[in-house]
Image 1 (cartoon, rainbow over the protein chains, first blue to last red):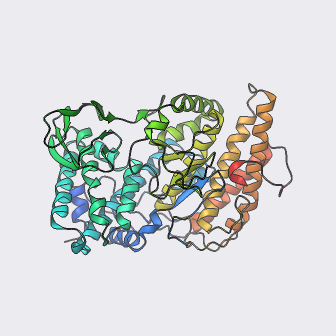
Image 2 (tube, chains in turn green, orange; image 1 turned 180 degrees about the vertical axis):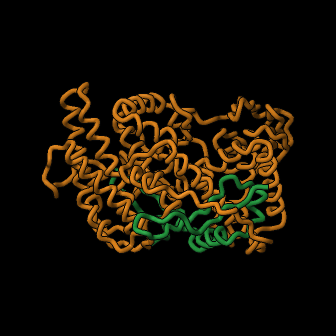
Image 3 (cartoon, rainbow over the protein chains, first blue to last red; image 1 turned 135 degrees about the vertical axis):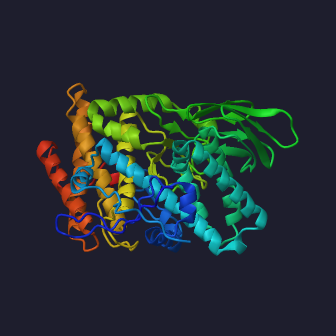
Length: 76
Length: 446
């Protein structure tokens, strides 16, 4: 059975700071495992998504009358 | 339910060397592989979020719709058992990300059951690619059944029956014995024939699709102030997209082979945009990337190959940075628009400053290299040099915002310093040294 890689710490930077990935490593995880998984790292990522689903609906665009970047409707 | 953990595994964040390469707007094949692994992990996080949302709001989805969702999920699992790469390719296809974003935005609301129906088409597309036999009746949307990355059947019926075997499949409408479309699988590619069947064209020299069919290929509210929608096949079939693509890719390979390689590695689909929005407002030279759909470039018809090459360079950076930010947060800034930049009259949030600076740095690099090509006529070289100068100037104005920001993470600071170094290198290597602060004559840097 594939195992879920959920790591909330990763190699430090040159200045000693710890990098915290916002997406857990789910490569190699099958869908059955994903469905059952109650891993803390994955749970944090899920709460981030469900807490701000509008954050996914951002478009970066350029040209026309506009320039790079805008938020989707409903976003400040 | 118990948590499953790996034995000492680490999340695949980019190494400092990889981060430095990405900051220079470059990437090795390994860097790109890391970004694509992050893309798949992100897609699975969104799927898990959908499952969690459904469990938290059981009242939002009527029993029959929930039962269909479960049937579709089981099909996806079976397809994965058979051919995991085929399922991954389907889930990671950009319009599937857009559909997931729209569906997650509807969790708990009345629109959710309708949005969920498309999951059946996603599962069917994966199973068709995998060669998994199945039978399924799928709901049509807007008079068609669209199978992501495979094609669409125009069907004046509320549903289409799909009967799939290992190598072939048949699409019929309920009550009719006539086959509306017959599909044939070769490898993980599925092609079809039949009245009303259309499929995205594969762009020459790549695996990138010209997607003018998928209902989720563009943001629901369109792109830009003109709210440009995706252009339909009726328009795009008469436009020279394959020829432009071939020429743009050839130009990109001649100018910077590594950038051409990164473009073809990351780009899954090119989505033509209509030149006119729903309120009649027209716009030219518009291109876009949707955060939920990295790997898709949305663009109006460019003026020529060089313009399309620039669009590909520009939008590929947005995809790269979106994927990198998911793997390794570069900033913790919110959406508050607080910073003035040279390419827009209104204040921008830090995320917008970072995205714009990065894309423009790549464009400055591209146009500088383009201007250095001796085979070009003097006029084209002069024009390229002017574009290089313009983009370089915009980046020079925006970099201090990033370098002085308290909202960058330590990785973000490393990244900004890397961009600054690359920018300094561009200034040494080329450019006419136009004075900072002059109005920019080119498209997205005004």
